[in-house]
Every structure is written in structure tokens, then in C-alpha cells.
Length: 461
Image (tube, rainbow, N blue to C red; front, side, top):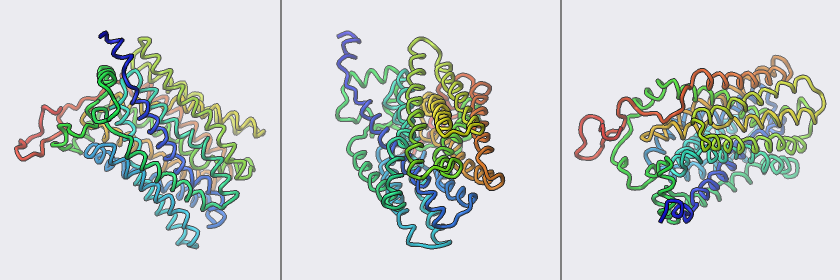
């Protein structure tokens, strides 16, 4: 049988895995955005200032960032299937509990609200590193950009699908209903995950032809296997972190993701408030209007991955194929500053749509992580990347809150967000260099069996 004939008969289970990642990530981002949709009502109910609202918005990111490295360790130790299941279930349960904040008043209500957002951040920590591990395990290099772009574009699809629904829920049934509905939906999805997600070698529906195809193309098919040798080894965490952070390539990718995520967190937290307070829309209208830039972001996100993978298939280098959409996308994202100089709402929506289309095209960071993460520590590398990226979830809401309190307008906030897009461009052009899989200079896996040597196993490097 020819290789072409074998490939023609290969199953396509990897695309089903990607569909599940897309659904789960959609729920993930919808749950993150619940606080933004309910925000105007909560602000009035609790009498919060812009700075206080900024701290509430940032609560998720504080714990999300701090839990990244433990989350990455859990993924590398126990695998994505089990770790990710508990992640989905717990963040959904905590989201449901947020509907009970209304039973408290004053400082107690703010404290409970802040605490629950902290817990949601902890629970969600393994999600995107888990996405990256599964993309590395299931997809060859020439398809990985599309795969990463698709699951990453779920952040926009979440707004397209759920922002109008959540706006209607707040308008018709009260702000509490948003948390009950979204939390319950997430718990159902966690049960679906448990029944459908496996590593390539363990999946009951994959055939040998597909397994051979993805392995030959660079997929790390043993990464999620139950019987992999790494089960008898442990990661030297601090040595791993030191070596990852010493890489100029990886550090440039990490800092670039911080800048790109500044755009993401503006959209997730302050954008609906911008529409209501600066553009004087109703919360119902804002929910629908927010979906339009999200549609553009979703289309841009998928297109960026497709363009990148086609560049690889046409013979362009991996570095050129990943960097070109990122740089061009961030240039388009900077257009949001134009909103400071226009009055018509429809123009604002169009400019924001262009900006988030660009942000979508440039959101290839997780493809780069899947391309560069070392085999021994894919979860840890993804966790470091996400730690840097989601530090923007702490700084962005708070900085914008202070800008609003000092100036009474969003003009400075839009400049701040646009400037971060410019810095992301500089990171990829001047700092990252060649994009390739990172290799540890010193072994980071050590045997933990009864006959383990005293020093790290070099065969694992």
C-alpha cells in the first residue's frame, strides 16, 4: 500500500478532539466574561468605583497567573484528560456560586465576589496549557497553526454566541441568572470531556494510518499516553523554569503574549462598560454590539492559523509562517486608537471590529508554544507562557480603572491597549529570532523508581 493510499484511509479523530477543545474553550471564555456582562448591574448594586471595579475584574487573573505553574505540573504529572476534567468542573461550579453574591451586602458582597473570582482563576489555570499539550500530541506541525488558531478563536466565538444571550439574561431575568446558566452548562461539558478525550495512542477510534500520519508530521503522540516512561520520572521544576526563562526565543514569546493579552482582557472586562458608559448604550444593546467585533476576531483567528499553515506547506520557514500573521495582525489591532477621534457608534463598532480582526490574526501564540515547547515539559512551558500572558489580566483592568478615574474617559485606555500591540510587534521582530523546538541543556527529568540513580537521567533529555 502506498503512503498516499494509507493516508487516504486514515481516520480524522484529531479534528473531533479539536472540536471538543473549541467547545470547552468557548465555555471557558464565556465564564470569564460573565462578570463583564453583569458588571454594570453589579457596579450599581454594590456602589463600586471604577478602581474597585478594576480590582474585581482583575481578581480572576491574580489567581489564574499564580496557579499556572502548579497547573502545568499537574498536566505533566497526571495528563490532560484528568487534570482538565477537574478544571472544567470546578470553574463551572464556582461560576454558579457567583449567582449567590446577591444574598450578601456591602463589604461582604464584594469580598465573596472577589473570592469566587479568585477560585475560578485557580480552577481555569490548566486549561490553555492543556490545549497546547493536546495540540502538540494530536497535530502535525503543518496543521498545528490552524488547530491552535481554532481553539484560541473560541474566545471570540464565546462573545458571539453568549454575549447576546447573557445580555438578554441580565435584562430579562436579572444578573444572577447569567452565573447559574453558564455554570450549569460548564458542568455538563465537563462530563462530555471525560467520555471523549484521550491521547492519540489511547483513543479507541483512531486507526494506525492516522497515528502514523500525525507522528511522521511531528506530533508528540506519546505525550498523553497512559503507559509512557515519564510516569516513573519526575520533573526538576526549578531547573526547568530557569532554562526556559534563559531562552531569548521563549522569553520574547512570553512577553509578546503579555502584550497581546492586554487586548484580550480589555475586551473581556472593560469593553462592555465602554459601550455603556462612554457610548451610552443599554446593557442589552451592548451585549449584541460586543458580538460584532467578536465575529471579526473569530474570523481573523481562524484565518491567521490557515495563512500560517499554508505558508509552511508552500515552503516558507516556520519562523516566517508564524511571525508574519502576528506582526500584520498587531498592526491592524492598533487601529482601535482611532475610536478616540470619531463620534458615530457605527464607526466605532467598525473600527473595533477591524482591531479585533487583527488581534485574531495575530493570536498565534499557542501555535508557537506547541512548536517550541520541550518534549519533557510541554505543560510547564505552556504554563510559563500563560503566566506571562495572563499577568495582563491583572494589570489591564487595574491600569484602565486608574486611567478612567483620573481622566473620566476611555481615550487614554485605548492608547494604552494599542501601545501594547506595538510592543508585541517589537518582541517578535527583535527578540524571538528563529522559532524552533527548545531543548534543555541540562536534563530535567529524574527517575523516581526504586532503582533510580542519584542524578537526573540523561536518557530523558
